[in-house]
Image 1 (spheres, rainbow, N blue to C red):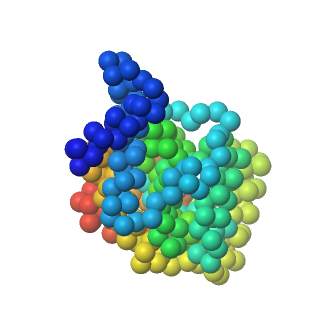
Image 2: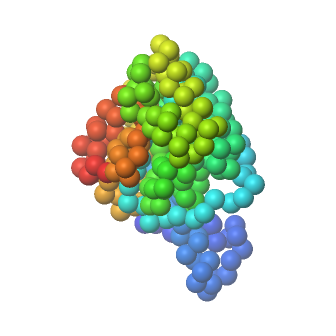
Image 3: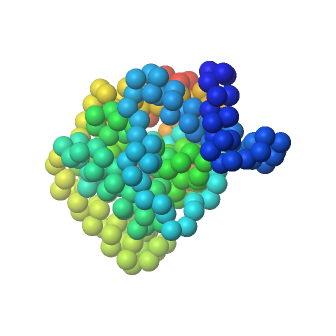
Length: 252
Ligand SMILES: [Zn+2]
């Protein structure tokens, strides 16, 4: 692994045309090399991973803030408007469009579709936007599926009134619509075996590169911050618990 990283390091230096004695460039390239090494490690384990350029990610109008010293992983599901019946790459672009409109950037670092393809959603060198007031040091992984069961949004979500109070009428109404949609949603996805294998490999690989101590569902991170979210749904919570045990990590 060490030799491999060094090869990549040299490659990245050549690409940006930096001189070898430029200390700042070396730090930047180390991060670039780590980003690539994560992708390569998953490829070596025979997982299909699509980089941002491979799935033709759009460049955001403004560059997201930087982040690096990750200590936690948060598990999300894309929710009711997403389905395993749809094409994974289409669902990735749909999640991107929603996030660009809402946050001006893709909010999660990685996405996993129902066929087990892993997407580099946001370059790992940039800060996610997946947990309200709690993104620093947290890697966001989203399942491009709906892992909630009927009524979960009403039970665990922030509630229409709280959202309206905190974020204004427009967001309150959209939260209300989400609750309604969830109540009447009958088609939920169940995690596929390939998807679980990909999640296990991805989180394991991330713990090889970062000093990760915590893993949990979005719901748990929100609770720790005194807010509430239904995400990642009942199945997403089961997956988060399973990964946490497998990797011997703490809850948020
Ligand atoms: Zn979430």
